[in-house]
Length: 253
Length: 256
Image (cartoon, rainbow over all chains, first blue to last red; front, top):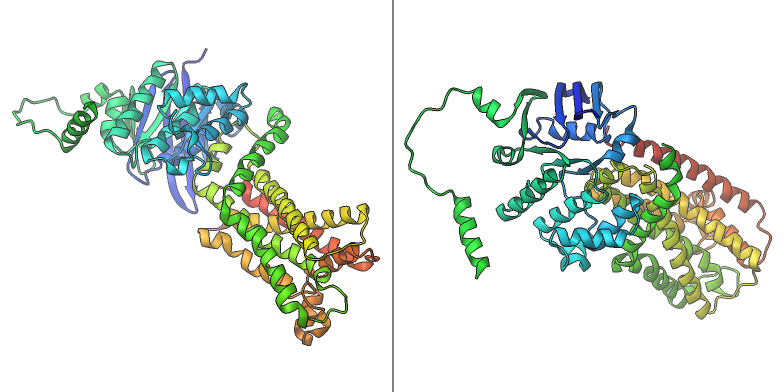
């Protein structure tokens, strides 16, 4: 039983002369949440696409769940599920139909039951009969992640799962990700928000200009910076805290 | 690999079901591919038809093959459009990262075009019957007509697939439909080519739609099809093979 869900060594990829990945090394342990942190254009999505067999690397090795991605894409696909950067839901279908579609394509028994269970788990039971085009951004994202849960893949890729969501929807997605990891699923997550990585990840790697410049646990990363000094700062609530306090108070009424 | 091959037909059937739902839920599609050709048929028969001399007793008999091809030509823009949307919205990426036959996603769209066209053509023929269309064709001839229409549909659909897969914008994806709309108009579909000026006539007689129209017309009136059948098969067969291989090539290289 190997401990690593993902093992990447010297990964390189260029697009039409543009060197996007310049030798990426990383390891993800089974059952952990791994966050790949980087700005737009740093190559996060390219790494996700290579690991999910959508793109072929020019150079280097990428092993997912024990299988090399280029040599054995079929085996890799059986072990993973991908939630891409844009909510890949079929807007002409209802939420339920979207889930049934994926269950059928994964050749699972009783697709309807699977769909109903997931709708319930993601708080979409009421919306399940409406076409996804009527959903809000947060609902769409929840449906998108629910579709990735069909078949219970042991390794889940989430490419910027909270980009473009409002704070409430973002916290909802965080809760879902934490639940997933608690159930033993390995989560590979990309994000451009430091806070998101801090909230969720067991290990964090920072990607910059096609290379991992630093990686480790949050505690390890903090140790690499000068020791904490004591300063007194007046604690002001952030706008996000104010927003959530007001909206939360409203909902309780 | 073996399992994905075993599941090719099952996966393609699921994809077909998905994309047929898109067709039936889009009023716009139904109007364009069924009601517009019927409106054109009414217009040509009851407004323009009286002034058109085709040398046959019934203009609707003369016109129907062309209307059927116009309906097909109208529909293929939707294949490009739906393919483009699936790529743009990341739906293909989701499918391609799953353990399913990769080409099932593309075949789903192509077969949807075939099935929905056959349905709309059937409705158009029913309306033509109400308008006085009569055919002396037997079952074999009707099967021949269906086969010819299916081949023509697949030919245009695979061309549309190339456009949808390689387009950079939604307008670009749908643009392929415009030049194809004109092919039935500049053929023997509505008027005999003998009435056209020489340059137009040369084009009209040497483009794929004319032999397809003539073959269907001959079959429907129970006449010998002659060389037109072989010409039609050569045109459509050649183009469909070329378009299929090109579309598959673009499809396989997606993302790279």
